[in-house]
Image (spheres, rainbow, N blue to C red):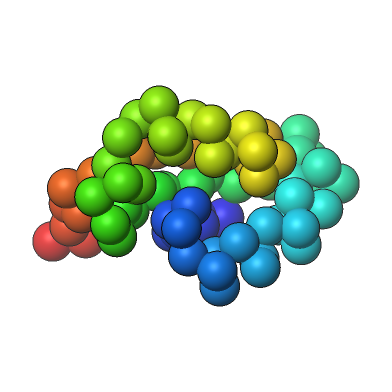
Length: 74
């Protein structure tokens, strides 16, 4: 599962508990979550702020930082 999100987005934050449950229950059973953090605001581009937010929010799956919003699907 690929999750595109930002740590400042309330809608993104509202999905984390359910996603964390899925990850914790199925991780290692041929199921993986990979988060792609696509910064929406300048304060979200700071890797230190992002790292602190990920810990505070309990995000425990791999996350790629996409601070420049690269288009992966071209």
